[in-house]
Image (cartoon, rainbow, N blue to C red; front, side, top):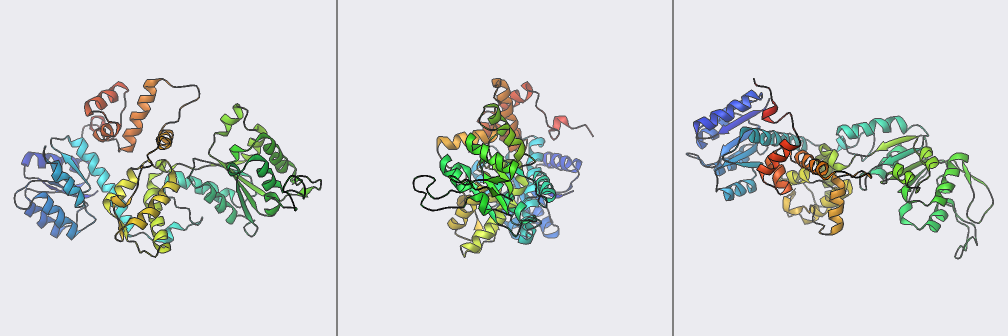
Length: 464
């Protein structure tokens, strides 16, 4: 139950709003004028204030200023009449969480209020945030979402073992960080952790890097050199982007996994290998096997334990903790103490889809710390989705829709896009319509056409 103040001079509207939130289980206080609302705020603490823009006595903007002075963590939603959008924009600049334009339906207001209350909860957590909370069983891995808790559960079980691990996930989801955490929490933690990006080297150089070479093995090989398998002996070898490896190199890696031995390039001496292997890829290896691009026997050797790293858009609960972690880190690195994020900046961070995942978030916060004029990050300090190239469009599209190889009917694709837009906009149909660039009427028609529903929508709730 949350405490909500409704300030509105029109009696029937005020009563209707109050009744809706009481039915939803909240405690509601009503005020018929701005002065009356201010008096209530001086006596009680509210989680949310819903106020009209124009009222007798104090108007909505002045009430908003007073709210910010009394309790800056209280969320505010401004109700505005048609034609007062400029006033709504000014309210957002002064710190209102959102606005809603009259006339509106109560369902839309309830959903905006629910989102505002959740935002307030995140702000409260942010104010109490302690960096020690970020360092749990696995240093530097931040994750409170259910999907990350499942990753932690697997890590807890697999890290102490000697099992080969395959980490799957999009670029920027933290696969290397997971590999390091497995090594640090294993019996091999005192041994070396050696890593190599298979996609960063041409195939002939990759073989030399992995297995080493003898002097004279090829042009330019003027001395003997140990490879990564040799350097990682009694430790862990992390093969990143293993899906790009050629068939010939795959066969040699398979032999090491099966027989625990190899020879350097140009050599005949057998070298024993006591290495734990962790591999990672952003490719669909099963599709690569079907296309004849990846060995099935190597896949099953690697796939003893699989860890699927969720993209950031599927673990939005972690955006605020991650952003705060990076804010503290870069603030310290750049000798620029940072206090936190403004409500508008937090709103922008949580609404962004993060096609570049954690890597994109990290870069965004580093730039924001550099650009910030104060100790608080504002929306203008953030650069979100401004890459501007065709590649960015493709990455944004691929981050949202995964098309099956056998194809998909256009209507099914349209339904997927509508569902994704609704999810990204907390199932507020008006916001989802704006997101897709269509009218509310078109959105409502499509929702009915595809029989899309959601339990929070008023028409789906059972009558009291």
